[in-house]
Amino acid sequence: MRLDESGNSTDTRRGERGFSLIETLISIAILTSVSLGVAQLFAVSAMANQTAKNKTSTSMLAMEKMEQLRGLTWGFATGSGGELGLPASDSVTDLGMVPAATGGPGLLPSPAGTLENNVAYYVDFLDAGGGWLGTGTNPPAGTVYVRRWSVDPLPTSPNDTLVLQVMATTLKQELLRATRAAGGARGRLPADTWLVSVKTRKAL
Image 1 (cartoon, rainbow, N blue to C red):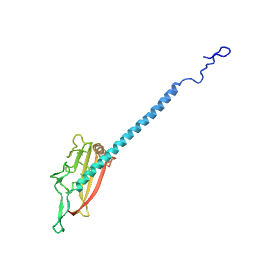
Image 2 (tube, rainbow, N blue to C red):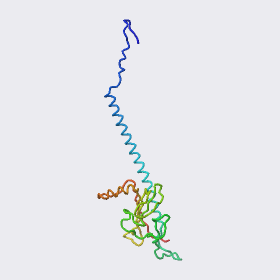
Image 3 (cartoon, one colour):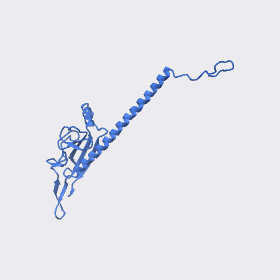
Image 4 (cartoon, helix red, strand yellow):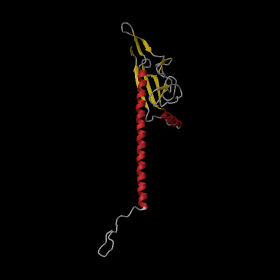
């Protein structure tokens, strides 16, 4: 403490008062608001990352099934002289099984609704790593992805050209889609992948 010539203290400590209660409450409110905003940003970012991951996975799974469909026999047998013979078509492969087995429809026209519903021979279920879990009308335990496909003759050339479609999605989105369908709204969701290809007969 300092004293002046008269012996009075010169230490007034002006400008060193603390925060008032109101200022403290306002600061806490601002900090809380900013923290909530940051937390929401992290939540949105995590959701976007998960959607992107699922989209990548469904794209790969859909392309894999499309390659399997396109790899089935669909063409014309050739004679010894190279002339085109009778149509040759796969009508026995079951692509719902892994590895593919016999006893299925191959490239025969699929029933209606195979892209929207679990129909035998036109659906399979996969785990988080894309591993095959089974087929049938109900997803087995551990299912993360659902994959469906259809085979339709092209109307303008039904004997020689097929339209192949593959849809891959997550089981979570399928359950959400089923809920929306009950209310009349049914459409694609962010992680869905839908591929379409045309296969025309060629010499084998």
